[in-house]
Image (cartoon, rainbow, N blue to C red; front, side, top):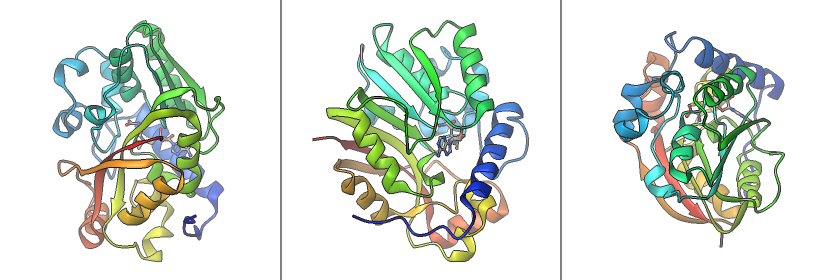
Length: 260
Ligand SMILES: C[S@@+](CC[C@H](N)C(=O)[O-])C[C@H]1O[C@@H](n2cnc3c(N)ncnc32)[C@H](O)[C@@H]1O
């Protein structure tokens, strides 16, 4: 078993910084962030414009994902999908289109403002196959083996214990189910000066795991890695974030893994 490196700051402080950042993402998507958001980003990452046209524009405005992975997820009509860290809901709306009225999508997020925005849009636009749950991605209040697919975008890097998150994804998947995600990893291990900066952590940099270590976390959870692709179209925008990204090879990847 590979253990996540110790986090040298208070996890409660980290949680409140992450919640504050993503509360702003929900409520003020045109504010200033270390990262890009919205439709231009989504299209550059590979989201299909015709799909984006069919989902709430407000969810797209608050899209803070880091890559596209729906081509890997290959969601089918009637499937059950769990979105870990569903934010303002963009990926759960796209998943809803793919699984259709006989399928189900369950978004899990700890930040109330993100979840309530997604919930309001879901209700307004009658996306009746989606529900949102308040919860943490390392202890999801759902039954073993209930998901055909677990998806996640830009979230697992924020978790101090990534082992626990991948074990939880594996628990939620049925045998033969798949995990498809986009996330931030690094080429080289980050120095403590970056790991211990909770603001950079909340901006999806400080918590990024080295890419081989990230792969081991997935495999240690009992999942088989099928593919890992670089998302070259993703870039950070603040000077601080750009510098760290350049120096340590902080980058976005999309991953497909399956549960044997
Ligand atoms: C970078 S945003 C991405 C949101 C969404 N996936 C998207 O693509 O727009 C990260 C989201 O993960 C949520 N989050 C971070 N850590 C979490 C945790 N441990 N448990 C539940 N949600 C978490 C945050 O509240 C935030 O909404």
